[in-house]
Image (cartoon, rainbow, N blue to C red; front, side, top):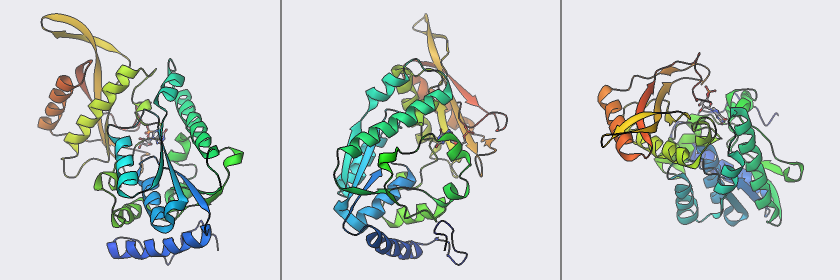
Length: 324
Ligand code: XMP
């Protein structure tokens, strides 16, 4: 039987009970596969890797080592949440790598989007491989592959994500959620006790805020993206239903503002909210006017360097969802 094919008889996981049955089954399967050997997992804090981490902690505890690489392009509070949930609450063996300077130094002055993606992808693999080489006795690599990744190996995610692990890191894979769809992964994550803010996260690109700090990334503009993004998420999260994806991009352009009677140059924060089914086409979402005004007021008041807020109402096509 092809282990990468979801059996037609497999029931869709929609309830906590079905999730628990799946978890029990996978705990046993992982224990059988891994025995007393060690597993390494790159834990980004995204839904898929978080669910795999929580599942593997239950199955093999200390035999799992998680590596969280903070590349400086994560959203506000994310690295802290990974440490809190996995190290403090779930007692994981977690290696936290502060690689912020390393990534931002490599990205300095680089404008071209695909070059930025390549640098981020390659640097991530280098950092992860370095950490792996410090550990002894690793024989397996945990991975948050999900069924759409298998079905659409030429889909959006594969198209964007660069890299693959080097030869000496080609361990046997442990992929407990590879036959699940995203909604099922979320039900399983919830049953594993992960917080809602992790389980119901909107999609977030691998290169993170790097593709929303449009053009050559500078630390000050990146901080502005991170702060403005946190405000937009906080305000739009309150909508029912929340759009599929919503965020801020800040292009590398300044325009005139006026403060205390003096003119000065500042950036424009671009708010974008879209709905889509498959990310191949997307529609701009109408954000209620009071909400967009609140976002404007908060960004202007709370984020250094921004003097203008724009609302991107473009559909895909012709605009892509991200700005780069
Ligand atoms: P675009 O901008 O191509 O985005 O309309 C479609 C979806 O893919 C996400 N995206 C990425 N995801 N790595 C990823 O894992 C990337 O480099 C990347 N670029 C875009 C985007 O957020 C949207 O959901």
